[in-house]
Image (tube, rainbow, N blue to C red; front, side):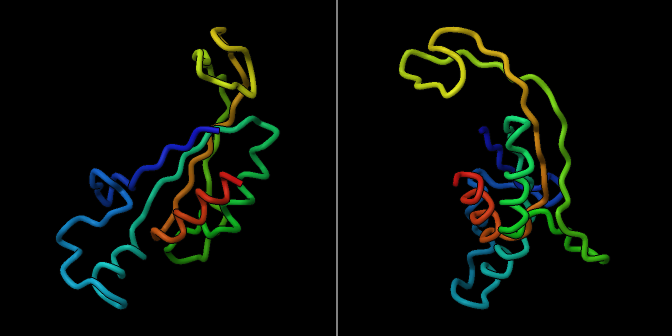
Length: 131
């Protein structure tokens, strides 16, 4: 599984997306501007999985709070997905679950993208994918 983790381009980004930019670190502590900004930041979580695992992975991230649209309507479990063919060549130090070291492998994959609001929710969603 591959995970791509970016801030929403409409909101902006910083070099380390899990660290607020210096201007929001003026008042550290509970209830501070920094903590409020961290809880409201929007992220796009993108991952690639085998087709048979897509439903289970989406269920896990939705349970962690990903895929909830913060606007009116109370939308949940929002995601975009598409199917494709991934390819890779495992290097000498690899222990591939699919394919063989040194051989080009092509395999069906599903790309899933969803909105995640708040740093804590992002951490929970990524942890859910790693389980």
